[in-house]
Figure (spheres, rainbow, N blue to C red):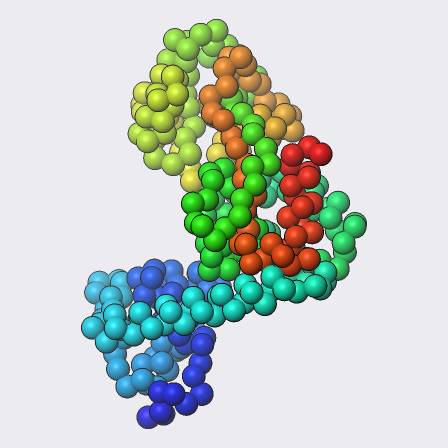
Length: 296
């Protein structure tokens, strides 16, 4: 058995940490962008190096052993220190060339960001952009992304955020669908319509009710967690959906329902870590996004 202190492998520690936090090798592999067998070998090698068992298998998941729980504290401290080091080093970089990772919802990543990033590519071709299209909030404090576009203001004190846009969202459907059911002239007329939900149907109906839109769960005929799939279902004429007005305006064959009624306010927050904000490369991307999204 090797000495625990000899040739420490941070990849093994990251594999251990991700597995402990997600509860399974498959979820940890997805988080780290690795294969499940590779991750399993890294954890087995770490257990061999340390001479302890880190996980017990329970059903299809993994739970930490007592030794694993005790070591978890130290590995998380190491990760936090490594992240702070990386943030500080990147934040002091004067180089323009290099990669910047930007995360946004799948809808913003598809409809809003490409023309902005195309303009950036023409003015700063030495910058490589890694666009993370995800409806999950990436953890900027753990360097899962350099810059984030969010619809909620972040609460972590070490992040800097700027409100760059305040849009609205309305109800939309295809003209063909509205021809079939009749165009609603009042909220009461929505009772004859079908709706498409983002997320669980009952939660979606409840949220609409809180916004003054009376929709019964039985009216929701389709649901999805993907913004792109959601909008595709609306465009196929399967029912009414709610979409940001700026995206709907760029979508042919879509008609607003009760157009005077804005259902949801859609703020856009541009977020980065304070340590990264001083990096010339990241600051250039951040300022480009801010200017384009705020319409300046």
